[in-house]
Amino acid sequence: MRLGIVAQNDAGRMGYALWLNLYTGYFSEAPYDICEWESGKAGEAIAGGRLAPGKANGATVQVQADTLRNELRFKITDGEGGRAPWQVAIIRKKPVPLPATFAPIARIGKHGDAVELLKVQCYLPGGVIREQLTAPPLGVIVPELERALSLPDPSLGDHELAAARDKLEQAKIVQGLAEKGDGCPFLFLDAAALRDSESELPLLLPMQELLRNHPQWFHTEMLTLDDACTRTLAFDHVAVSHRWDEPSEPDPSGMQLAAMRSYLRDRPHVSRVWIDYCCMPQNTGTEVDIRTAEERQLFALMLRNVNLLYLGVNVLILTDRSYLSRFWTNFEAWLAMQDVSMHGLVTASSVTLRSRCTIMCVHGAPEALIESLIEEWSDCTAAKAYQKLSAPDVRATNQSDKDVQLPKILLLDKRVAAVALRKGIDRTPSPCKFGQQRAASWQPEDFPALERRKTF
Image (tube, rainbow, N blue to C red):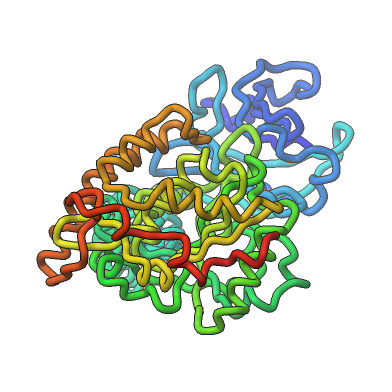
């Protein structure tokens, strides 16, 4: 399939065409009266061959004439629902400027076979505003909305402008909190839906697909640093800490999902579940990030605040033989075993641990790994956790994640102490930090609630 943009030249005639080959993902340039199969100069790969054979039927190609940036843009959704982000038309490493007049066409099959484009947009300020109004406050692209509101658009009514200004202010507040690590709205799955959905959800699905198929399963809730320290949501909210079995899919066998369902069925009072793959926008592309700008922003701000989840709600740890070698899982386990005090982050008492943290073995891992995990992260101050997690044998898929998160450990320790002082939270300090004996800390017999009887 090829997407063509025929543009008018200065003399008022259709002077050239841009052709996007959706099999290769390349733009080419050719005079309008010459067959595009035989001439033209190769441009930049922008679509990664998104419409491979078998995916062209039912595909949607959207074209935007972006009057704010003076550029042509394209967005492709293949016949199976896979989405590519908006892409700028580029020829010879330069964006293609918006022509005075353009006529989009599409051809599929042999030269001369034409299909009608399903959607063509002129990207005016009103389009920007309406698009941003549908985004959650955390995903609003603030500079775009600000610029659109500064430009007149007679197609907008007063109520839309007022709603857009309210959305802008709300987005600034929410994103400001998230940028500072003071709080973030997270998407949680409905625990009741997850308990009883074997036929509908035999395997974990990425957030975008779940939102399309089951939007009623999701609930957005704000979690602040104060909430995490006071454990406001700890009674009926749980965050899952697990290792991804494959780089692109965390649980292809369904074993982890089975363990999650077992946990939830044993705890009917749990109403909300957070799973990274299902509750953060995922990049399901192979070579390029196909998420929208809003989805990428949501992911980045949620990731910046994910420590609040593992510090502030119940935690289900699914451990296996590789769990202790990964940065994110170790970081999450350490947070799950911490409590809050005026001294900062301290090792939680056995009573607190039993009520907030559950460890289950998956993939037939031996139950001795539970003791190993507790031994690794018990009596561990923030300074010691920083040292351990900095070790080269603690690996991260994206090294940048490790580089960004490590400094936050010591900062979080100080911020938690400030909240505890302000809230009057005074819990027992870490034995390691204040010189108490090892016997005063966790022992294996303290944890009858740990899931020793079940492995998956």
